[in-house]
Image 1 (spheres, rainbow, N blue to C red):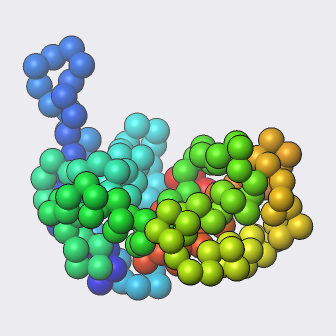
Image 2: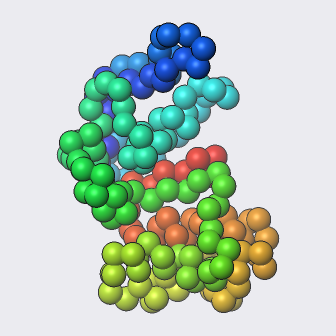
Length: 169
């Protein structure tokens, strides 16, 4: 089992009332290696909240969320940061590319942070996979929106994550 949600819930304090707003309740999900899952729903239905939980960017208010058998809620912030970097690839709606870095440098950033060997070769290969090898030395402002999205995809897959999350890809 690569991903498991067991009775996961998430609530937020209401901004003007002294109560919580329940966004997710008793979510159950099991995803095996190699499976693809799409979460669809209306605007405001909790999709982005769920994505934040799956990415380890936020904690559920109830239940358990496990990736590769590891309960994310039981990890320190430092452990979670490392786990996220090694196991979770995230493609955000906004590309979040570093404007002062080239496409290649943006892609290699997650590998450099944890000093992985061969980071430049792996980053070049990831850019090849999204057909941007000829744009490796371009800065984000020199790329089209579609090209920036492909750089973000390459950055997410370069670490060979256990799970890949995409927000409106």
